[in-house]
Length: 173
Ligand SMILES: CC(C)(COP(=O)(O)OP(=O)(O)OC[C@H]1O[C@@H](n2cnc3c(N)ncnc32)[C@H](O)[C@@H]1OP(=O)(O)O)[C@@H](O)C(=O)NCCC(=O)NCCS
Image 1 (spheres, helix red, strand yellow):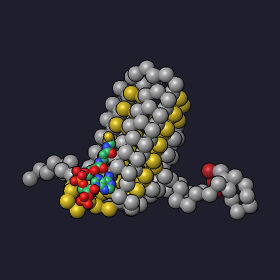
Image 2 (cartoon, protein in one colour):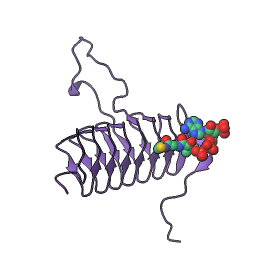
Image 3 (cartoon, helix red, strand yellow):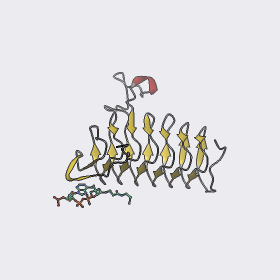
């Protein structure tokens, strides 16, 4: 565990962040109440909310938003401008017209498994599980679970017929 990121950078907010060792955090970032594993790199203009976790040796590229309820395992690549979602049917206000607060909506968790990669500008809808080593194409809208090693792209994201990633787990046989 470390008290500070391993690098210096201007204009970044780190509030109640649990940091592993050798974490690099870029400028103009907003990280609060989250946990970042050792060796991970966080690019500029990234926001990571309270309750989100990012594993070890991950790369999170600039302009990405990781919200509460998102769990990112080790060695995951998150491209530029990737948007996570944790509320399937968001509303600004209650039926009575009062601004909604945390108690008025239900958080839906999302998991990105080890060594998966998510292409730039992808949107990951609430409640999906992106399997180990899977690859999500740039600009995809992921609405359903992605199998381990699967390559998906498009809106909504569907498997690319020709492509599958090399398995990331070794076999003992
Ligand atoms: C999804 C991806 C891995 C597929 O790569 P690939 O296996 O080399 O695929 P190809 O380029 O051979 O394309 C295969 C087909 O999928 C389509 N396709 C490829 N990427 C696509 C995408 N992101 N969205 C929609 N369709 C896509 C191609 O148009 C092609 O369709 P066609 O057969 O009808 O012509 C890649 O295109 C991609 O999006 N990678 C993410 C890159 C990224 O965001 N990096 C972030 C850091 S810079």
